[in-house]
Image 1 (cartoon, helix red, strand yellow):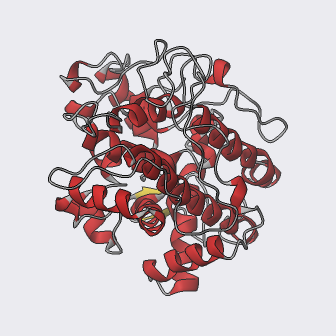
Image 2 (spheres, rainbow, N blue to C red):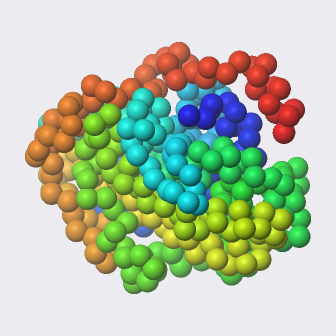
Image 3 (cartoon, helix red, strand yellow):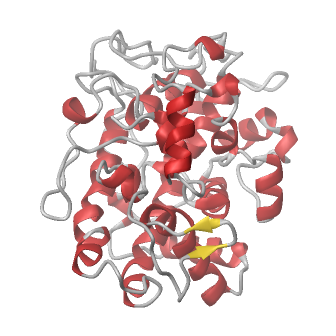
Length: 383
C-alpha cells in the first residue's frame, strides 16, 4: 500500500481535476430522483443545493461537493483521508491486470473500504428518517461524491510506479510541464487528457461536455452498454473483508484499462508525445469513465436517501425510484438477504470487519500516516 503522504507529494494535480469531478457531480445531479435531489438541496445550501458546478474557478475556490475531498485531505483535520482515494492493485500491467479485494485492500483503508464506510454514514434510519450519524452525514456524502469518481480512474486502481506518478518526465503536446506542474502519467489521466478534450472539442464549455456525456448515456452510445455501468450488488453489500461489493466491481472495471489502454503504449515508447496518438486512443476511455462516475453516484445517492426525511416535509415514499430513464436501468429491489457479517437486511449496519474513518475527533483517526514529516520533506525535494 502506498503511503498517503508520499502519494500527496507525488501527485501534481487532483484526481480527474476539478473539471472532471464537477462534471461527475453535474451528471449525477441530472439522474437524481426527485426526493434525492431535494435532500441534496437540503444538505448543501452553501453549494446552491447541487452536486456540481460549471464554474471551475468556483469549484477550485469553494471546493464544490465532488471536489471537497481533494481540498480537505491536505488539512490536519482530515489527514486520515489520502489513502482512501485509491486502491493498490498488486498486479503487473500491461501483462496482467487484476483487482483482488482480499489481496489489495484487506484492512479497508482504501477506496473500496471508504465507499462502504461512507455509504453507511450517509444513510438514514428506515423507521425515523433521521441520519444514522448527523455529525458525519454531510462529510460522508461529500466523500462519496468524490470517491465515485476516483474509483473510475484506472491509475487510482494501480500500484505500478505509484499509480503512474513516477512515470516522468512526460511530453504532452510538445511540453513537459504546464506552469509549475510537471507532467507525469498519472496527471495526464487525472487532468490534462480530459482538459484537452473539453478545450479542443467543446470550446472549454463544461456544460456542453456534460450534456454530451448525458446524451451518450441516454442514447446508450458508449462502447459499453449503460446497463453494465452499475454493479448487481446492493449498495450495502460487503465483501468478505468488509469492503463495498459494488465498489469492488467498479475497481475491477477501472483496473482492466491499465492493461488495455494505459500502460502498453507507455512501455512501447515512453519518449513519445502523449498528446498525439496516445491521446487519440484514450480520451474516449477517460470520458466514459467520468460518465460512469456520475451515473453511479446518482444511483448510490438515490438508494441512500430513500430513507431520509427532510425536516418539516412528509416522510419519503418507501419505494426506490430509478434515475431519469436511462437505457438498461432497472431499480434494484430492496435487500432482504444477508450479504456479509454486519449487514442486516434492509438497513445498513456497521460491518464488524470494516473500519470507521472520520469518527469524531477526526484528527485522531487510526488512519494517520506512518511516514514521518522528515521523510515527506526528503521525498518532495527528491522529486
